[in-house]
Length: 205
Image (tube, rainbow, N blue to C red; front, top):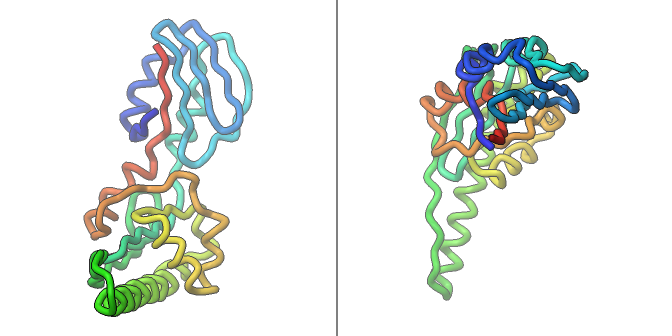
């Protein structure tokens, strides 16, 4: 299983249109059986079409891959965050920030307790700042955002979403895929659209 960007995948699939084989659309995915093997594709934002065909039929899939969406992104790791709203692949609102969070301390005793309390305080400050910026930058897009992409560290993003009641609208819109991005930076946001619009592909020869 791998994720392939929509432009690359569309170019690859176009050559299969009309070939002898079988196509089955079901449960948000399409399974293609053709002379070269079997291919299952799941578009990132769903695929409503259902049906079975005795040839390679790709129209509904290609339409789903080509659709643009309004997506809010919340990327958080202990040490930094990047958040923004995308209209299609265009970043239209964003905020990036960083806060120092100490690494883990293995020594015991009172010094370890002080270290732990300091680290917990730094983590809390980061979460509160990221949540406040998410409310400021992303909430104005509530009602327009169709999907929410989370990435970075799972525990950190959960803490940010739980930190403020005015972020609750985001939770039902969260995509199934979690984006394991490196330390969040502006560049991370700029590169995210490729991953947002990449489809999950499973191949069997």
